[in-house]
Image (cartoon, rainbow, N blue to C red; front, side):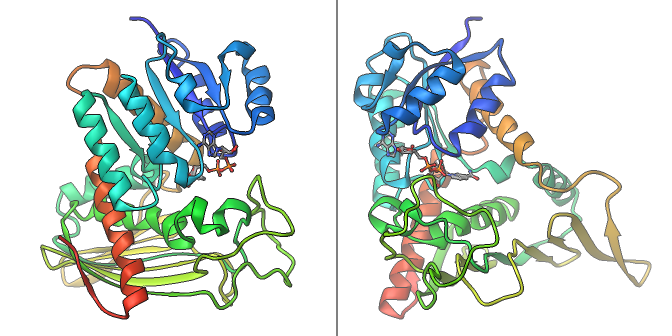
Length: 357
Ligand SMILES: NC(=O)c1ccc[n+]([C@@H]2O[C@H](COP(=O)([O-])OP(=O)(O)OC[C@H]3O[C@@H](n4cnc5c(N)ncnc54)[C@H](O)[C@@H]3O)[C@@H](O)[C@H]2O)c1
């Protein structure tokens, strides 16, 4: 079989992980074209990958005219996801689009519709679905370890971790830590809990600390376009409750800036038979012969960042080239996630619960 020819649009930070993913399967895919509104950035990547200048673009609409191109990988700021994805789908290309799917559910639905209309594969970059921790949790869930998971408490909060640049400019990001970080853990938990339909949400956002310009950053959270004079018009903390049609609930905290001990990324799952806490390792809680038990697996469960991206990219290529492959990160789940996020932001604005359709 011919190698898939991929065009990557958005050649900044995360595109590097996608490049590594394609390079891990050199007999099945090649990066054929690049596109970034910042031509210097695209040219730098092109020279590293040996891609000729005639296949480097600054306008996605031009790149997708390349007949040889099979698929487009969208790694732009969030506000470019819908435009780039729809342009590629309408040009007959398959698409992998980074998370969040778009900046709102309306755009996300238009992307799903474009995929269906053109009969092309659209996969969303829910990379946490491809982690080794998810693999373990899905397997034990299938085997009944949890019973029914009725509550999840998920947290993705940083002490001083606003990357700045486009991340804090709502016109390019669509929101703050909820849409950037929260999306990962909400999707992780919804997927593990069985992808139930969300029926209502209650959310509150704050912007008390913003990007903390007065505090020196200790960590490495810098957007590639961060500058000293930038817009900050997104939340710095979002909290929310999401209720599903089977009665289960997810509680979410997502923050760029919060006066806490450090950065956290904890997820806890509570089932009728067992529970789990994912902190970096997976800890399991249940009972045996009338005694409470705590279990750690003698198996690697720490989230493998590179391995997860490689698995996500391989799955994208499999979905396009291996007949019968069922996509595990489909557009419809991206649309549902965007409805949840829209609802949480709306609830925060109105002060009321939002009922989802
Ligand atoms: N899956 C993950 O864990 C993960 C991690 C980081 C970022 N992301 C997502 O990846 C995307 C990119 O994030 P990043 O950190 O790489 O940002 P970045 O700023 O480093 O790179 C984005 C690039 O896209 C370019 N760009 C923006 N709009 C464009 C358009 N319409 N056409 C062509 N180029 C365009 C910018 O010039 C920039 O070079 C975001 O949607 C982000 O949410 C996902």
